[in-house]
Image (tube, rainbow, N blue to C red):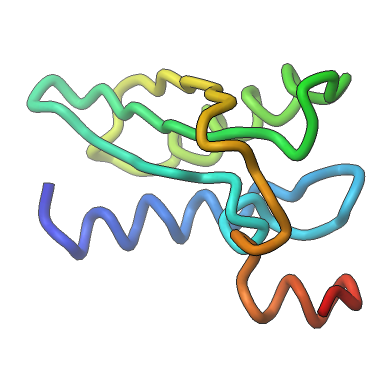
Length: 102
């Protein structure tokens, strides 16, 4: 996958807002990796801010919907992982400022 396409995928994922925090999943540092194979199947490896997140299915649906708008993506698989664990250090400067985190 070339860098331009990877940037497009990350750009689409920036439209997915964590419903509890009001910040997108990319700037929160929840997306660990994206890949697109030759068949057009995108794999998004990500985590959530907590293991018991009741909104996990909503976020997965939003990820799939966001990538469905890209012509190169035929299907999206979301792999939620817990290792490495998410910490506020994974957040972008923008997210830290928006949430008042230092």
